[in-house]
Image 1 (cartoon, rainbow, N blue to C red):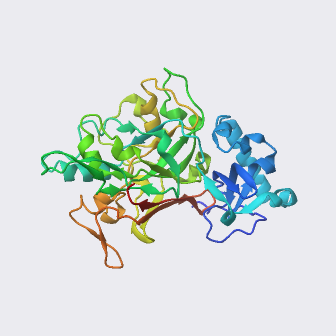
Image 2: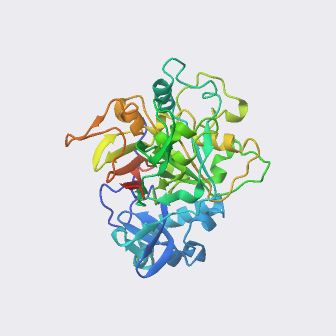
Image 3: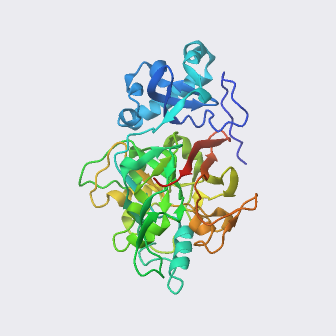
Length: 404
């Protein structure tokens, strides 16, 4: 019988239910009325000003990129230093003056996004969409269990949580229409996802194997890949998502270090198709027990489980680079919609309303198939921490504004 994890003691007065405890220590970029954008670390209900606490200008650049580029040794050293500062009372006098209440800060995009790739790695999500759109064929396409499917998105429209979601316009054509029409999307949707932030790049022409995942990926954040399903369904043949996706992708302001997620690692679901060697992760699986929650206007509507994802972030990174594509500091890649087997575990409205045929009924009696103007969607998540607590990922939220 193993003993329960012991929580490290701290001189900080942390809220009992905080998801930002010593096991977490996520990084973000914030500003106050008196300071410009700089790197902070969330601890309880406060933020530590890293530029002031460390005296290192790398934390005053307004983005995590320069620090991330220093690599795993620097990441490990700073994490150890932070833990020491927060647990040894001898440091209280030096550190406490640099703690700012989280309620007084404005959060910014934590990274300068270099490239953005979005995957399609939930078998439940892929099968749901396959059953909707190809009812007379196999739910999964023939390649789905052989490789992590993905597409390259638009890095310039990745924005921090809280950015307004302006309803996109574009061409759409219903199956019964003779010709396409132009106008605001009528099937605006979400995709609840988990994102992975690349800290260290790679050389062009050199693949990154699954075993080197931790040498390149700095941390994890929540992602909402907003989707205009009517625009997407008309444009995506034969090259895939374009304007139906590129108008906005929202990310949470906090990046949880990959090192904080060791206790959350799990074995991914069984694979019933043999993997090619470059995708074989049997010796070092990187499934993650991240539990997500989706709220519409404050009401909990779904709880997708990331542990059910068929393809892991290590496999996604290996596949993304196996052709020799290089990584850059600040690359962001997302998991694709996270969905579980239950109806209350679906990570998109197209699934929750089954393509619009089964409207979702809310507590106030109203219904939704897709999103209305004025709707606010918030995605949160937690994962087990090394000290037996649950770590939070902050939230990614967005309010739907009318088309312009």
